[in-house]
Image (cartoon, one colour):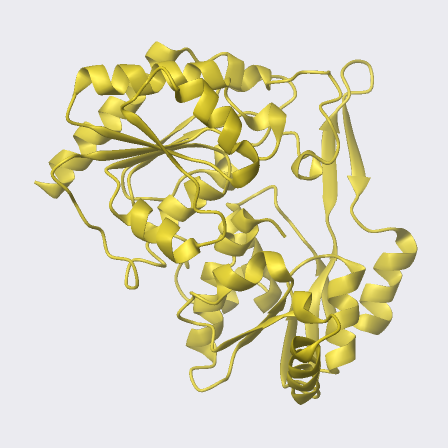
Amino acid sequence: MTFGDFVLVLPFLAELRRRHPAARITMVCGRRGSSLCALYPQVDEVLNLGLLRPGRAFLRTSARLLTLLRSDLVYALHPLLFSGAMAFFIRGRSRIGFSQATTRLYAGPPDGFVERPGVSRVGEWLLRRILLTDSRPMRTHDAHAAKRFLQLFGSPANVDGEPTLRGQLSTLYPRTSSTRPRIILAPFSGWTPRNWPLDRWVELARKLCAADPARQIVVSVDPSSAVAAQTAFAPLPEAKIFVPAEDFDHLFRTFAGAALVVSNDSFPLHAASALNVPSVGLFGPNIPLWFGGLAETHDDLFSPIECNPCVQRAGHEPCLRGLATCAALDAWSVEAVTARCLAVLAASARRAG
Protein backbone atom coordinates (compact mmCIF):
# COMPACT_ATOMS: atom_id res chain seq x y z
CA MET A 1 0.00 0.00 0.00
CA THR A 2 1.14 3.55 -0.73
CA PHE A 3 0.99 6.42 1.77
CA GLY A 4 -2.10 7.59 -0.08
CA ASP A 5 -3.75 4.19 0.47
CA PHE A 6 -3.01 4.41 4.18
CA VAL A 7 -4.84 7.76 4.31
CA LEU A 8 -7.76 6.39 2.30
CA VAL A 9 -8.25 3.63 4.89
CA LEU A 10 -9.39 6.22 7.48
CA PRO A 11 -13.16 5.92 6.72
CA PHE A 12 -12.88 2.15 7.13
CA LEU A 13 -11.19 2.56 10.52
CA ALA A 14 -13.83 5.07 11.64
CA GLU A 15 -16.61 2.66 10.72
CA LEU A 16 -14.78 -0.23 12.36
CA ARG A 17 -14.52 1.75 15.61
CA ARG A 18 -18.19 2.71 15.41
CA ARG A 19 -19.15 -0.95 15.10
CA HIS A 20 -16.78 -2.15 17.82
CA PRO A 21 -16.33 0.74 20.29
CA ALA A 22 -14.72 -1.43 22.98
CA ALA A 23 -12.43 -3.43 20.70
CA ARG A 24 -8.66 -3.16 20.63
CA ILE A 25 -7.68 -2.32 17.07
CA THR A 26 -4.16 -3.26 15.97
CA MET A 27 -2.72 -2.31 12.59
CA VAL A 28 -0.19 -4.85 11.31
CA CYS A 29 1.83 -3.30 8.50
CA GLY A 30 5.31 -2.82 7.15
CA ARG A 31 7.68 0.03 7.86
CA ARG A 32 6.06 2.25 5.23
CA GLY A 33 2.75 2.69 6.99
CA SER A 34 3.69 2.27 10.63
CA SER A 35 4.57 5.85 11.52
CA LEU A 36 1.50 7.14 9.67
CA CYS A 37 -1.01 4.72 11.20
CA ALA A 38 0.37 5.38 14.69
CA LEU A 39 -1.23 8.87 14.48
CA TYR A 40 -4.73 7.60 13.77
CA PRO A 41 -7.18 8.09 16.65
CA GLN A 42 -9.08 4.86 15.90
CA VAL A 43 -5.95 2.67 16.18
CA ASP A 44 -4.83 1.41 19.59
CA GLU A 45 -1.58 -0.19 18.46
CA VAL A 46 0.62 -0.45 15.38
CA LEU A 47 2.77 -3.51 14.82
CA ASN A 48 5.65 -2.78 12.44
CA LEU A 49 6.65 -5.95 10.60
CA GLY A 50 9.73 -4.12 9.37
CA LEU A 51 11.18 -4.77 12.83
CA LEU A 52 11.21 -8.52 12.24
CA ARG A 53 14.97 -8.63 11.86
CA PRO A 54 17.76 -9.81 14.18
CA GLY A 55 17.93 -7.86 17.43
CA ARG A 56 15.82 -6.93 20.42
CA ALA A 57 13.13 -5.41 18.23
CA PHE A 58 12.70 -8.79 16.55
CA LEU A 59 11.99 -10.48 19.86
CA ARG A 60 9.55 -7.78 21.00
CA THR A 61 7.71 -7.71 17.67
CA SER A 62 7.55 -11.51 17.45
CA ALA A 63 6.21 -11.76 20.99
CA ARG A 64 3.54 -9.12 20.29
CA LEU A 65 2.58 -10.84 17.03
CA LEU A 66 2.02 -14.10 18.89
CA THR A 67 -0.41 -12.37 21.27
CA LEU A 68 -2.62 -11.56 18.27
CA LEU A 69 -3.26 -15.24 17.55
CA ARG A 70 -6.93 -16.15 17.54
CA SER A 71 -8.11 -12.57 17.25
CA ASP A 72 -11.84 -12.18 16.78
CA LEU A 73 -11.62 -10.32 13.45
CA VAL A 74 -8.79 -9.95 10.97
CA TYR A 75 -9.17 -7.69 7.92
CA ALA A 76 -6.68 -8.08 5.07
CA LEU A 77 -6.74 -4.64 3.44
CA HIS A 78 -4.70 -5.47 0.35
CA PRO A 79 -5.44 -8.14 -2.29
CA LEU A 80 -2.04 -9.76 -1.94
CA LEU A 81 -1.00 -13.24 -0.89
CA PHE A 82 1.18 -11.74 1.85
CA SER A 83 -1.82 -10.01 3.47
CA GLY A 84 -3.89 -13.18 3.24
CA ALA A 85 -1.05 -15.29 4.60
CA MET A 86 -0.60 -12.92 7.56
CA ALA A 87 -4.34 -13.13 8.31
CA PHE A 88 -4.08 -16.93 8.13
CA PHE A 89 -1.06 -16.93 10.45
CA ILE A 90 -2.91 -14.87 13.04
CA ARG A 91 -5.71 -17.43 12.76
CA GLY A 92 -8.47 -14.93 13.30
CA ARG A 93 -11.88 -16.47 13.86
CA SER A 94 -13.05 -14.40 10.89
CA ARG A 95 -10.53 -13.45 8.20
CA ILE A 96 -12.04 -10.99 5.74
CA GLY A 97 -10.25 -9.54 2.75
CA PHE A 98 -10.04 -8.91 -0.97
CA SER A 99 -9.40 -11.79 -3.34
CA GLN A 100 -8.70 -9.83 -6.51
CA ALA A 101 -8.05 -6.40 -8.01
CA THR A 102 -7.27 -5.45 -11.58
CA THR A 103 -4.77 -3.27 -13.41
CA ARG A 104 -6.19 -1.33 -16.37
CA LEU A 105 -3.92 0.05 -19.09
CA TYR A 106 -4.58 1.64 -22.46
CA ALA A 107 -2.63 0.00 -25.27
CA GLY A 108 -4.08 2.13 -28.08
CA PRO A 109 -5.99 0.93 -31.14
CA PRO A 110 -6.87 -1.72 -32.07
CA ASP A 111 -6.36 -3.34 -28.66
CA GLY A 112 -7.98 -0.57 -26.60
CA PHE A 113 -7.87 -1.24 -22.87
CA VAL A 114 -6.01 -4.17 -21.39
CA GLU A 115 -6.98 -5.45 -17.97
CA ARG A 116 -4.62 -7.59 -15.95
CA PRO A 117 -5.44 -9.37 -12.68
CA GLY A 118 -3.50 -8.25 -9.63
CA VAL A 119 -3.35 -11.83 -8.30
CA SER A 120 -2.72 -15.05 -10.25
CA ARG A 121 -5.45 -17.67 -10.49
CA VAL A 122 -3.61 -19.85 -8.01
CA GLY A 123 -3.19 -16.90 -5.64
CA GLU A 124 -6.86 -15.99 -5.93
CA TRP A 125 -7.84 -19.60 -5.18
CA LEU A 126 -5.63 -19.62 -2.08
CA LEU A 127 -7.13 -16.36 -0.85
CA ARG A 128 -10.71 -17.47 -1.42
CA ARG A 129 -10.47 -21.09 -0.29
CA ILE A 130 -7.78 -21.27 2.37
CA LEU A 131 -6.30 -18.01 3.65
CA LEU A 132 -9.54 -16.03 4.11
CA THR A 133 -12.87 -17.08 5.58
CA ASP A 134 -14.71 -14.38 3.63
CA SER A 135 -13.41 -12.73 0.48
CA ARG A 136 -14.63 -10.47 -2.28
CA PRO A 137 -13.12 -8.74 -5.32
CA MET A 138 -12.10 -5.11 -4.88
CA ARG A 139 -14.42 -2.85 -6.88
CA THR A 140 -12.97 0.57 -7.73
CA HIS A 141 -14.96 1.67 -10.77
CA ASP A 142 -18.14 3.06 -9.21
CA ALA A 143 -17.13 5.07 -6.14
CA HIS A 144 -14.38 7.11 -4.54
CA ALA A 145 -11.38 5.09 -3.41
CA ALA A 146 -11.96 6.25 0.18
CA LYS A 147 -14.98 3.93 0.18
CA ARG A 148 -13.35 0.87 -1.35
CA PHE A 149 -12.24 -0.57 2.00
CA LEU A 150 -15.85 -0.30 3.24
CA GLN A 151 -16.66 -3.16 0.87
CA LEU A 152 -15.15 -5.44 3.50
CA PHE A 153 -18.20 -4.80 5.69
CA GLY A 154 -20.52 -6.24 3.04
CA SER A 155 -23.21 -4.44 1.10
CA PRO A 156 -23.47 -0.62 1.37
CA ALA A 157 -26.71 -1.10 3.31
CA ASN A 158 -24.66 -2.42 6.21
CA VAL A 159 -22.83 0.91 6.61
CA ASP A 160 -24.71 3.70 8.35
CA GLY A 161 -24.66 7.03 6.53
CA GLU A 162 -21.86 7.91 4.14
CA PRO A 163 -18.43 7.54 5.79
CA THR A 164 -16.08 10.00 4.17
CA LEU A 165 -12.42 10.94 4.23
CA ARG A 166 -13.28 14.60 4.79
CA GLY A 167 -12.04 15.90 8.12
CA GLN A 168 -11.07 12.49 9.53
CA LEU A 169 -7.96 14.05 11.10
CA SER A 170 -9.41 17.47 11.91
CA THR A 171 -9.88 16.69 15.60
CA LEU A 172 -6.19 15.90 16.06
CA TYR A 173 -5.02 18.58 13.64
CA PRO A 174 -7.48 21.51 13.65
CA ARG A 175 -7.20 24.19 11.01
CA THR A 176 -4.86 27.04 11.88
CA SER A 177 -4.09 30.35 10.19
CA SER A 178 -1.12 32.70 10.00
CA THR A 179 -0.44 36.27 9.00
CA ARG A 180 1.07 34.98 5.74
CA PRO A 181 -1.38 32.73 3.87
CA ARG A 182 0.37 29.43 3.17
CA ILE A 183 -0.08 27.66 -0.16
CA ILE A 184 1.35 24.14 -0.37
CA LEU A 185 2.36 22.78 -3.75
CA ALA A 186 2.97 19.03 -4.13
CA PRO A 187 4.44 18.54 -7.62
CA PHE A 188 5.57 14.90 -7.33
CA SER A 189 3.53 11.72 -7.03
CA GLY A 190 6.06 8.93 -7.49
CA TRP A 191 4.36 8.05 -10.78
CA THR A 192 5.77 10.09 -13.69
CA PRO A 193 2.71 10.16 -16.04
CA ARG A 194 0.68 11.51 -13.11
CA ASN A 195 2.94 14.56 -12.63
CA TRP A 196 2.10 17.94 -14.14
CA PRO A 197 5.36 19.27 -15.66
CA LEU A 198 7.69 20.72 -13.02
CA ASP A 199 8.38 23.96 -14.91
CA ARG A 200 4.64 24.71 -14.81
CA TRP A 201 4.61 24.26 -11.04
CA VAL A 202 7.35 26.89 -10.78
CA GLU A 203 5.38 29.28 -12.98
CA LEU A 204 2.23 28.57 -10.94
CA ALA A 205 4.09 29.51 -7.76
CA ARG A 206 5.30 32.72 -9.39
CA LYS A 207 1.78 33.71 -10.48
CA LEU A 208 0.25 32.95 -7.09
CA CYS A 209 2.87 35.13 -5.43
CA ALA A 210 2.28 37.90 -7.94
CA ALA A 211 -1.46 37.82 -7.20
CA ASP A 212 -0.72 38.31 -3.48
CA PRO A 213 2.92 39.00 -2.44
CA ALA A 214 2.01 38.19 1.18
CA ARG A 215 1.54 34.53 0.30
CA GLN A 216 4.02 31.93 1.47
CA ILE A 217 4.68 29.12 -1.01
CA VAL A 218 5.68 25.77 0.48
CA VAL A 219 6.77 22.99 -1.91
CA SER A 220 6.19 19.63 -0.23
CA VAL A 221 8.35 16.81 -1.59
CA ASP A 222 9.76 13.47 -0.51
CA PRO A 223 13.53 13.06 -0.03
CA SER A 224 14.02 11.47 -3.46
CA SER A 225 12.59 14.58 -5.17
CA ALA A 226 14.19 17.22 -2.93
CA VAL A 227 17.17 17.99 -5.19
CA ALA A 228 14.99 18.34 -8.29
CA ALA A 229 12.63 20.68 -6.41
CA GLN A 230 15.46 22.80 -5.00
CA THR A 231 16.96 23.21 -8.48
CA ALA A 232 13.66 24.03 -10.17
CA PHE A 233 12.46 26.55 -7.56
CA ALA A 234 15.87 28.18 -6.96
CA PRO A 235 14.93 31.28 -9.06
CA LEU A 236 11.91 31.82 -6.81
CA PRO A 237 13.12 32.72 -3.27
CA GLU A 238 9.51 33.00 -2.06
CA ALA A 239 9.17 29.22 -2.37
CA LYS A 240 10.38 27.14 0.56
CA ILE A 241 11.14 23.45 0.08
CA PHE A 242 9.49 21.24 2.69
CA VAL A 243 10.84 17.69 3.10
CA PRO A 244 8.91 16.03 5.96
CA ALA A 245 10.17 12.55 5.03
CA GLU A 246 8.15 10.25 7.32
CA ASP A 247 7.53 12.78 10.08
CA PHE A 248 3.79 12.73 9.44
CA ASP A 249 2.93 14.66 12.58
CA HIS A 250 5.00 17.59 11.27
CA LEU A 251 3.45 17.15 7.81
CA PHE A 252 -0.13 17.21 9.10
CA ARG A 253 0.54 20.25 11.31
CA THR A 254 2.04 22.08 8.34
CA PHE A 255 -0.85 21.15 6.05
CA ALA A 256 -3.43 22.11 8.71
CA GLY A 257 -2.09 25.67 8.55
CA ALA A 258 -2.44 25.92 4.76
CA ALA A 259 -4.90 28.15 2.96
CA LEU A 260 -4.67 25.83 -0.06
CA VAL A 261 -3.03 22.56 -1.11
CA VAL A 262 -2.37 22.02 -4.82
CA SER A 263 -1.37 18.50 -5.70
CA ASN A 264 -1.23 15.81 -8.32
CA ASP A 265 -3.40 12.78 -7.68
CA SER A 266 -1.37 11.54 -4.71
CA PHE A 267 -0.96 11.39 -0.93
CA PRO A 268 -0.88 15.20 -0.29
CA LEU A 269 -4.32 15.62 -1.88
CA HIS A 270 -5.77 12.87 0.33
CA ALA A 271 -4.06 14.40 3.37
CA ALA A 272 -5.74 17.73 2.58
CA SER A 273 -9.11 15.96 2.43
CA ALA A 274 -8.52 14.24 5.78
CA LEU A 275 -7.67 17.65 7.28
CA ASN A 276 -10.50 19.43 5.40
CA VAL A 277 -8.02 21.91 3.93
CA PRO A 278 -9.05 23.63 0.65
CA SER A 279 -7.46 21.83 -2.29
CA VAL A 280 -6.97 21.69 -6.03
CA GLY A 281 -6.20 18.31 -7.60
CA LEU A 282 -4.61 17.79 -11.02
CA PHE A 283 -5.69 14.51 -12.62
CA GLY A 284 -4.30 12.52 -15.52
CA PRO A 285 -4.31 8.70 -15.67
CA ASN A 286 -6.91 8.35 -12.89
CA ILE A 287 -10.19 10.21 -12.57
CA PRO A 288 -11.62 12.46 -9.83
CA LEU A 289 -14.56 10.07 -9.35
CA TRP A 290 -12.09 7.64 -7.79
CA PHE A 291 -9.46 9.86 -6.18
CA GLY A 292 -10.74 13.46 -6.19
CA GLY A 293 -10.37 15.94 -3.34
CA LEU A 294 -13.03 15.73 -0.62
CA ALA A 295 -12.46 18.94 1.34
CA GLU A 296 -15.45 21.25 1.68
CA THR A 297 -13.72 23.66 -0.71
CA HIS A 298 -11.88 21.98 -3.55
CA ASP A 299 -11.65 21.72 -7.32
CA ASP A 300 -10.48 18.80 -9.45
CA LEU A 301 -8.88 19.61 -12.80
CA PHE A 302 -9.48 16.87 -15.33
CA SER A 303 -9.61 16.71 -19.13
CA PRO A 304 -11.12 13.40 -20.26
CA ILE A 305 -9.22 11.64 -23.04
CA GLU A 306 -9.73 8.32 -24.80
CA CYS A 307 -7.45 6.40 -22.46
CA ASN A 308 -8.87 7.56 -19.11
CA PRO A 309 -9.01 6.01 -16.63
CA CYS A 310 -5.75 4.07 -16.72
CA VAL A 311 -4.67 2.26 -13.54
CA GLN A 312 -0.99 1.40 -13.86
CA ARG A 313 -0.24 -0.21 -10.51
CA ALA A 314 1.12 3.10 -9.16
CA GLY A 315 3.57 3.40 -12.03
CA HIS A 316 5.05 -0.07 -11.82
CA GLU A 317 3.86 -0.49 -15.40
CA PRO A 318 4.70 2.44 -17.72
CA CYS A 319 2.29 4.27 -19.97
CA LEU A 320 1.75 2.00 -22.98
CA ARG A 321 1.55 5.08 -25.21
CA GLY A 322 5.03 6.12 -24.09
CA LEU A 323 3.88 9.45 -22.59
CA ALA A 324 6.11 11.02 -19.95
CA THR A 325 3.15 13.16 -18.80
CA CYS A 326 -0.43 12.00 -19.26
CA ALA A 327 -2.10 13.94 -22.09
CA ALA A 328 -5.00 14.77 -19.75
CA LEU A 329 -2.57 16.66 -17.52
CA ASP A 330 -0.54 18.20 -20.30
CA ALA A 331 -3.69 19.95 -21.54
CA TRP A 332 -3.78 22.26 -18.49
CA SER A 333 -2.01 25.58 -18.88
CA VAL A 334 -0.46 27.50 -16.00
CA GLU A 335 -3.00 30.27 -16.49
CA ALA A 336 -5.95 27.89 -16.22
CA VAL A 337 -4.59 26.21 -13.07
CA THR A 338 -3.83 29.59 -11.49
CA ALA A 339 -7.38 30.75 -12.13
CA ARG A 340 -8.79 27.63 -10.47
CA CYS A 341 -6.51 28.07 -7.45
CA LEU A 342 -7.55 31.69 -6.99
CA ALA A 343 -11.21 30.68 -7.30
CA VAL A 344 -10.86 28.04 -4.57
CA LEU A 345 -9.05 30.54 -2.31
CA ALA A 346 -11.85 33.05 -2.83
CA ALA A 347 -14.56 30.42 -2.16
CA SER A 348 -12.74 29.34 1.00
CA ALA A 349 -12.54 32.95 2.21
CA ARG A 350 -16.27 33.41 1.62
CA ARG A 351 -17.04 30.21 3.52
CA ALA A 352 -14.84 31.31 6.45
CA GLY A 353 -16.44 34.75 6.47
